[in-house]
Amino acid sequence: MKALSIKQPFATLIMNGLKDREHRTWTTDFRGKFMIHSSKIPDIKFMEEYGFNKTALSNGVLLGVVELYDVEIYKNEIKAFLLRNPIEFKEPIQYIGQLGFFEVDKSILLKK
Image (cartoon, rainbow, N blue to C red):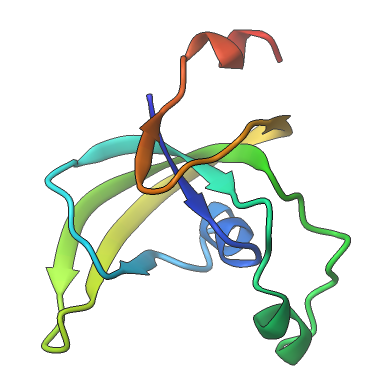
């Protein structure tokens, strides 16, 4: 199954259904379910500015699954991955992320 690394707190906001778009400079033809991986390094500046507890959010883990159902391209060429139906894992799963979409063996889910 595919996964995408996203910095905290945005990864958690997606899993909580509070963020339904992920902005990127690149696009994809992929549509379907993929895992949200929280990047090892969070967006500290954003977290401090908006009062997020830096130690409350997990980093370097798979958090759950979400569906990418479309991509919008804005006039400034920024792409928005449109997301819906987040399903959070009961427990985060330690995993090393990568750039772009990457493959995660589904058997890792059976270990939890």
